[in-house]
Length: 97
Image 1 (cartoon, rainbow, N blue to C red):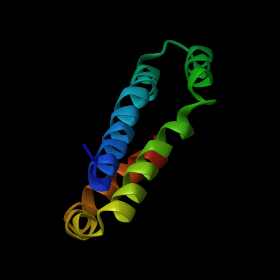
Image 2 (cartoon, rainbow, N blue to C red):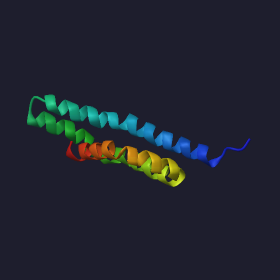
Image 3 (tube, rainbow, N blue to C red):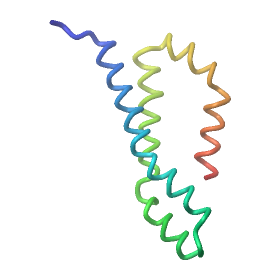
């Protein structure tokens, strides 16, 4: 039984997106809780727990987008123009959060 390359790439992309969803939940949860922190010290303590790892989670998005472009260029050409606005909003939210 031979496994073809598109199936392997689809699994790699699925794992990348799944890892982002699983690992970024911590960052987003801490970000939401900082709004209800009682003091500036508590807010700083919350963000200090996330600071070492929060940029690493966005790496999974780069793997997903780059892998889609490399493995499935036709799908990338169809999907990305349809999602320009949501992707730009997501990037702005990541920058300004």
